Image 1 (tube, rainbow, N blue to C red):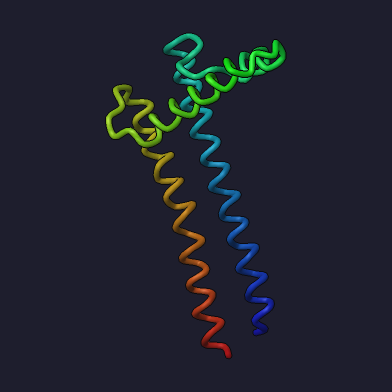
Image 2 (image 1 turned 90 degrees about the vertical axis):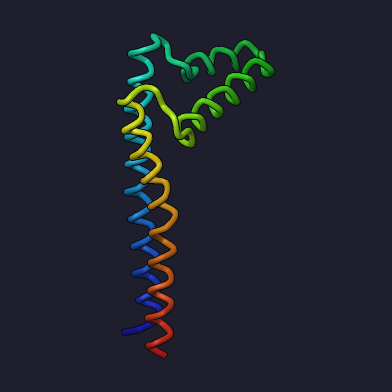
Length: 121
């Protein structure tokens, strides 16, 4: 087997796996956002419509504040070990697992492919 074919296979394998993890990540975030919207009405995060309206009015300072507020709320959901809502806690656990696997899986595949390529030479 040619090493170039092995490298191409590894590249496409990693890209495919990352696309799968991105899909799962987006799916879990959409579920979390729908739960937040159901419970808090508009939710603790600003919607894309409100961000767009603020940007169109030219209030950039308020827009930056809204963006950083969304980022801090997302980080609080993703990295907090104590979440009161059990529905969000389950989804946050799945989200953390997806992020961890999205980082770890390509590293393992790369290590294995490097090892195989070294054996083939």
